[in-house]
Structure formats: structure tokens, C-alpha cells
Amino acid sequence: MNSAVRLGLMLGLMAGPAVAQEGDPQRGETAAAVCVACHQANGSGKHIDGAESWPRLAGQNADYIAKQLQDFKAGRRQNATMQPFANMLDDQQIADVAAYYSQLPVTEAEGGGEADEALLARGEQLALRGDWNAYIVSCKSCHGPGNEGAGSTFPGIASQHAGYIEAQLHAWQANERGNDPQNLMGAIAKRMSDEDIRAVAAWLASQKVTAQ
Image (cartoon, rainbow, N blue to C red; front, side, top):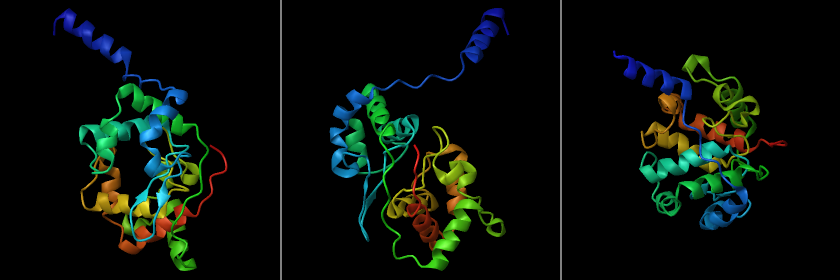
């Protein structure tokens, strides 16, 4: 390896990962006009029993939101509804929208209200302790204390709509979603039964997030 190549590699390592584009919440509020129909003005999203659920964005990590929008644009994450809207936003608008939603207060989730005590107890077990007999890691192992999110990789799933959580877990089971690191979610989801998915979704939706 000649000295020029070696120097280039050293400088690249010193520079570290690329810095995420900085967003402006005020500009983001304007750009988010295209998001309101599904995600609501307050970022609360919407749950419809027996139909589609749109996720809560309020209080999510800005870099996480931006990554998901970029993944929709690039086709790394598939959703027929989201892709056209993501394609309306340029990189700066994506950063601005993400910054806007990240600073909104977390809203209460919907769905899972019909769950009985046994189902909720199973959901609590999976969310907080996992099930090592089935090789299911607890949700909080990655999603952080209270399942309120951990950095830009793991979103807050406490107080997220039950229908949305269920839909995403089924998507990972079916290999219809795979934009997470090392396919962690895909591996876990495939070990979960339909009842496990209903249980953890219902329990997480019932949790209140009091601090952002």
C-alpha cells in the first residue's frame, strides 16, 4: 500500500460516519403538510380497528424518522402509501420534517383495548423480559428503558398504536420489511406466534410515556 492510499484511509477513519443533515422544526411544520392526512397535525397517527394503522411520529428520534423517509424513497422499505409522499420531499425537507415531529410531545396510543389480563401479561413479559425458551429477546433490550426508544436505530414503541406494531411484526415475519440492522427484528418476529404479536402490541399501546 503506498503512502497516499494509507493517508487517505487514515483520514477516512478519522472523519468517522457522515453527520446527519440538520433539520429545522419551523420549516418542518410547513413541509409536514403532506403528512397530516395520515399522521395528524400533532403527529399522533391513527389506529382503525380491523383496518390500517398509521404510526405515531410525535416524539420519535429525528434521525430515525429521517432514515425511514429516506428508505421509502430508495425502496429499501416498501409501502404504497408512503413512497409517493416521501418522494415529494427533498433531503432538507426530510430533515426538517423529522426535526419537527421529534420535538412534539408523545401522544397516547390506540388499539388493544379488548385484550384480557392474560394477553396483557404475556405482552408485558415479551416487552420487558422476553421469552428465552422461545429465543425471543425482550423489546426493551433494544428499544431502551420503558421501550421509549434508543438513539436513531431503535424507535420508541411504548404508546405506539397496536395495529401498527402488529402490522410491522407481520411484515418482518413475511420478509416484507428488512431495513433494520442485521435483520434483528426479522429474526425475532419469526419466533413469535400471532398471539405473541397481539399481546406485545396491546401491552405496548397501553403504556404511557410521560417524558420525552
